[in-house]
Length: 413
Ligand SMILES: *Cc1c(COP(=O)(O)O)cnc(C)c1O
Image 1: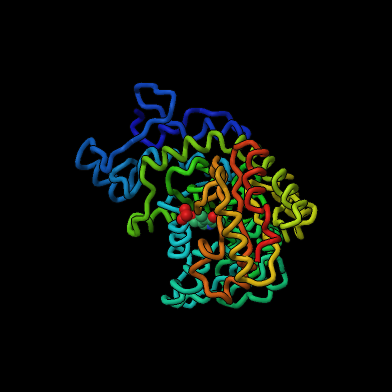
Image 2: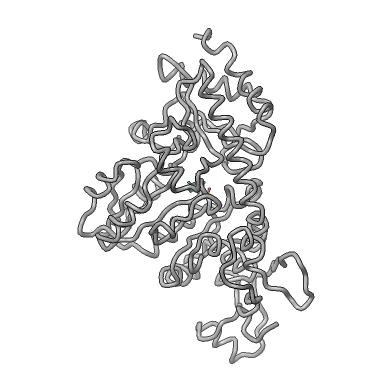
């Protein structure tokens, strides 16, 4: 081992490697045993060579692992690999995606500061910023995801953060990252982008001007629905603040979970390509079904921000789509959605996305269930809406699965 343990990660990779290469090669620190697969350091503490070195490390004057709430080599490996894929200088890992958002807000905001978010953001994000952080005096405005003018109009002298998510969950609304970065920077604020849906395989917000990227590693980064994980990526000056804060705040990523997601990232690009291709096929097929009212998928020409999405996401629509069944009333819509979901024998009824197993969800009663009906309407999450996170099954089997529930729907009261 090198005398400075963080040097162990410098394996001499050449500059300018492509993301596909970085996904399997960055963040490798071989132990003296020379293991090929990344080692898993399941340890809460680290033995110090002597008391003086220990003191230096605890004071932060010297690099070196001390205690896994501060840092852990497997977690460092995950952080380095994700930062490389996002084109960010650094990353700090957290126990979940929501922990990443909590850490970012705790680190960047104080009482009297103002945040602007899209009203279509992930339900727990709206709850966290709109309600929980409000208790600590953080002001927030929620604006239309797609109306750049509304973001501009919401800027106040105390605006510190613009926080966007694109595409959104579940309606896959797309916002213009470069335009929001301009608004944020002109106001002296930062732009954070939740990149959980597109992932760095399709979209790299920092290259479009974002300052911070939020991840739920629970989703496509793991990709096999095994563990919770999260991260904030960005410039060293911001990540250092958050890495210092997390030592006290404590929502660190467990080494085992870091290792699982680290290995998941090796196949991220090929999974995203294959799942996006199937999602596109499902979206086009659903659009042609008479029982379906609307399909929301950035890869469809009918999507309102199709051109922007294709520009921003490398021409790929992503693995997640939503669709609403036709209905006369919200009650009927909910019954019909439940019928489609309950007829599935291949798709799982679960609340996750980005898994290799296709998942069908009723957002109005799950991810957005804690919102008020008014917040839900503002987010466009109607009762007939279902979200499909498309996995790696054969598209024909998925279509047959949904067809079972759609059959006879229009005859039902
Ligand atoms: C799931 C999700 C989160 C929260 O991540 P967890 O790991 O579940 O805490 C945040 N943003 C988006 C867009 C998500 O899909």
